[in-house]
Amino acid sequence: MTSATGAAIADAAALLRGARTGIAFTGAGVSVESGIPHFRGQGGLWTMFDPYKVAHIDTFRKDPAQYWTYSLNHRRSDAEPNPAHRALVELEQLGHLRAVVTQNTDGLHQQAGSGRVVELHGSSREVVCLECEARLPRDQADRMNREHCPPSCPACGGRFLKPTVVLFGEALPMPALRHAQAMAMAADVVLIVGSSLLVYPAAGIPRMALEHGAEQIVLAREVGVEGALRVPGVLGDRVQ
Image (cartoon, rainbow, N blue to C red; front, side, top):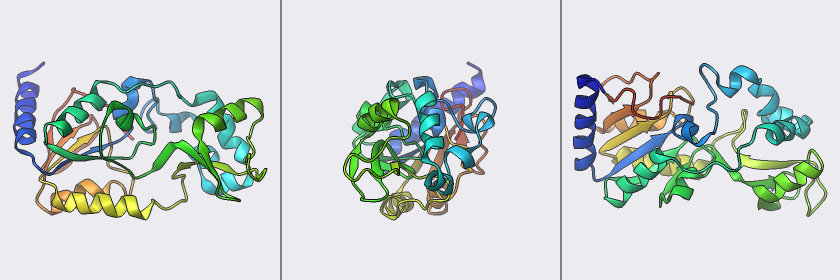
């Protein structure tokens, strides 16, 4: 560890110790150590697959088999929380973080024990039928998908079983977005972990906090945020 990195860690620790209304903002980088691939940047999923073919709502409505084939071959359902997830739980238990606002859909923050998680891009843990609105657990849909791709709705027989993830071309869930915005405006510290801050409107949350006077700590290799404390080479070094 360099002296500069050590000093940055000490400064970040001091900010977090003083936080009382802090929030964490996380992206794909926080889950890479759990074996879940990141999306952008070198080696990211979107360098190997066209997201507008496998993860766009218009494509899904035309041919859901493209998404479900991708899921069959690349979904990591056995991922476990890593030390970064558990560190955020500890900060919450110590009273320094009010919540985790995440771009991730993997549910690992909840699995680690975070009490308040705002999922801006929805959740991959549940599936909804776009025809009859029936909902079922993702593991049930995955079993059905392994038997027949794409799976059909067990309630109505419809072809459009979709994970409750925000696909390209869909709006963010407004209750989650408004909740995140309210916490950002009240935050005294925002801890940014593993996000490039390029995906909007989610990336507007840390910037809103900054505009309302929050201090910011960035743990991500490729992110530069004016006025933020950067801690290089610690965790979250691959970004969404």
